Image (cartoon, one colour):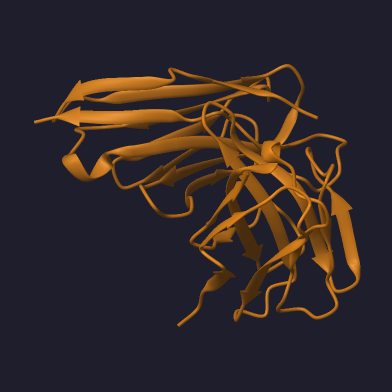
Length: 112
Length: 114
């Protein structure tokens, strides 16, 4: 199946710092999604991107659909303690069936 | 309350003993899906269903079966579980028949196969 490379694997930051993470693919994707998972729960959708170049915000979160359609970025501004969790990118590849491929996740840890 | 429910939440079993993990959603969603989550591997799709009586393989379908006889239920069946199927399993659903619509995830089922 498709593979997504998500980086970094983990981030240790101070409260108030900005955060950036990204996902890349070897093939073209039609849709990019960003999820957050907190301990003991299932992932929750944060942002969905449907067009190359699209830039979408959700509060302090901003995500972009790369122009090449092979990458996507998620930024979190002015991090707060409740941002802690694992962030996953996910996408649907062009020409593929209607399955969804997930990245391996970025574990965000915030030090007060 | 709109939700996706899974049962059981925790299960310890032995190799070869058939088991079923149930998934039910009360949102009249067309699309349902099963994922497994393993450390360092993220979520991998096992099977999905775009509507009743329509199921398709995801990235890791080997060793699993599913059925979609009615819209609200999408059970995951392990006919002969093996230790490499020890994992955290999530069921998810979305309104339209596309994986890229907002998927609502269940709380997860932690399965251990001895």
